Length: 231
Length: 231
Image (tube, rainbow over all chains, first blue to last red; front, side, top):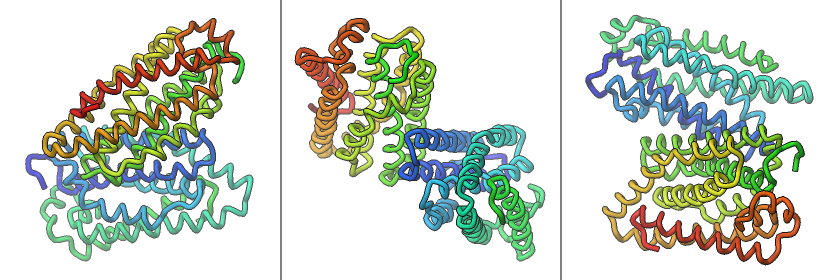
């Protein structure tokens, strides 16, 4: 970790994780262009992707301001996030939209965690990113409309959403083991305690991380409902 | 063409062409992510792509303001531009950068044509887009630096740039034949004459279009030089 920054290492980890999550989402959304049913939805997809890029840029620049090498901060999360995308490649436009909604929702949970723990300036940045909820609503509405037209889609898309969150939890567990500072942070300890226990996250921390994931799963259920999908 | 707009049909064509060119460039750049040599250049590539998306959005919204269905205006240019991308798929990061620079340069020539011919509000929009030259400079500099490090690359990249513009001219000729209004416009006639002659572009117009392409090729030579490449 580069020296000279003022944020606790766990927060840097969270910012690096979110930065690469946004960059990865950007490329994934652009990749899904072939699934878009029309020129209009291709354009909408490009707009969604551009929003992810703007978030990436904001996080990237904030990391640099904190004296951290942004690429170094992102690096530990490249493999798990790439693996998540690889294992959850959408096969249809609706699957792509559901993935966007679920993925943005999970990212939102992590953004909230950053807002709780980080310095004032980072908190303001993160809250600005979270305020951009309009497009998530558009995605949920599109999925709901498609389900109203063809209710038979609900079962398959619910399974898809379950797989998305299952694969995310699996990658998150791997990250929690390899990044003890992050595990400590997510376990809800204060920044100071987190710094002290940074190199030795015990089983207690991992259990706390599991509880964090459980609550994440609860919020996931709410997001499914917003799209008209059952848990 | 949707009724109710005030711009001459050729200008609508140019705006539709540029809108789809920006959208296509956005997806093409994102597609090239696999060629990026580092996480850092992946991020730069995402930033370039997001700029294309912003231009697409501005053109799209302007078309809608002019009372035109933006997708309808883009439609005639989807096939030729997709074909251009298909026939000029970069095989390396440098090829991708050269393509960005050459493609943006050609787009710039068309933007200048729009600025000459369109209404005041469209002209201001287009000049705003053209003012964003910083990133083109970054691309040219990166190519120049790579050539200084390995001068043997120059021959291959010069051939590549020639192929890019050759394929572009080939697609442009096809468009000029199928879009007589656009051919008339590019031949340098006034908007009013263009409207009158819209349905019957003669051989004279096509010759004029060829002259337009010749001057485009001249400007292309200047862009090659900016990247440190010979014609």
